[in-house]
Image 1 (spheres, each protein chain N blue to C red):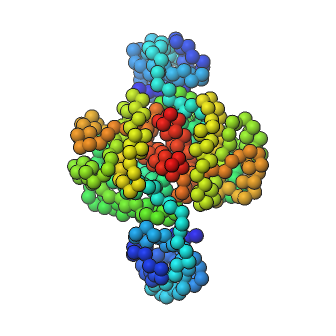
Image 2 (image 1 turned 45 degrees about the vertical axis):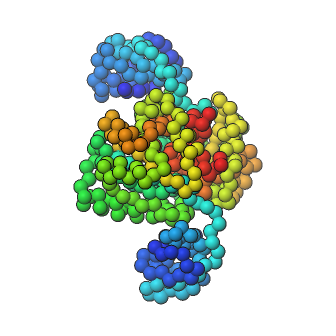
Image 3 (image 1 turned 90 degrees about the vertical axis):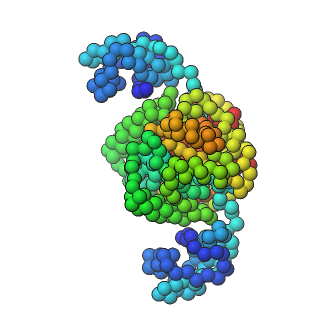
Length: 247
Length: 247
């Protein structure tokens, strides 16, 4: 069943215009009686039935609330040093399926990609669209946002999180294994975790130093060397396994 | 440091020809004294130094053995119903980084992709090349193989594994959570796990029935609906987290 993220707080009877209306009426050619999932900005998700469609709005009524909790109990934000080509698109698409709360992209010191403000704005729009489609497909109850920051803004934001991890390839090479497990154990429902990933060339020693000075903890993700776009999938899958299957 | 999979059993001094020789001498323009990693067919991995290079072979001597165990303690084979486009390439590349032991592709009942024998052979070659590159990059000590089978051959092969899981979207929808944890708990080092994933349309009820009759157990991968190419990443990451970080 089609799923729509609605930029309004929950109401049991709701009138919708804009893009979801266009999609229901023009793309899907829905009619009164058809059912869809609606996800409101407060994360309430309902199954709803179309009461009526006009040329510029659709009115729906709640059939039932979605019972299954589909969001990770902790909010995980993925910060990625600008990777090459379309890798950020892959990170956002798969990361959204795997439950990421938000995404941040920042220019890493070894990033080959150099994106100016205009390019960043365009890319951000595209990435938010990808996140929305992935969130609909994955039956998410929250819509991840993608934003671009500088390293400085990223480091300043560390204070907003309950824990900050730095995925570091050298940790994997040295067999570091404990940090991720420890961090997941310590966090409780509703808390916020930020995990920082380098671009293809990895994080530089100076970046590592600055991130650690701001409270980030180095963290290995198993003994194999993961590509920059693969490492977030590992982190999110491990967190889901830990919180949603084991506990 | 460059990593090569060598189709010979371990020897402390080894003479190599064929593609690895070509890559060392022509592509990398290596000379005597340069060092590389060699991984032998018995999974022994060594750091080795080039003693001499001729026009058709290179002779290397062991410097030291690689100490860190980089392979998952259980062998996980990923079986995928033919997905669309280049998704199998993504599954094999990322799945190899994440530690898969082998890959099997089979025509699912709802597979849109129809690949004849010639196409399959070409695709198989390409996928094995992708697996090799990903295994080198990820510092694997085993080289995953990719093969194509029929559903019948796949089911016959169930008997060769210590456990067979069927990733089933309906299990996720119904909130099934226990099977993956239970299976990972039961398996011990050296044992073999097969996990079967459907194509985009999912596995059909009849396929599920046949897989279950042959001993496969249905398994959910968390509460979000994962795309066909994302689900194997979740499975492999969860297994790595469980065996390599938690235990």
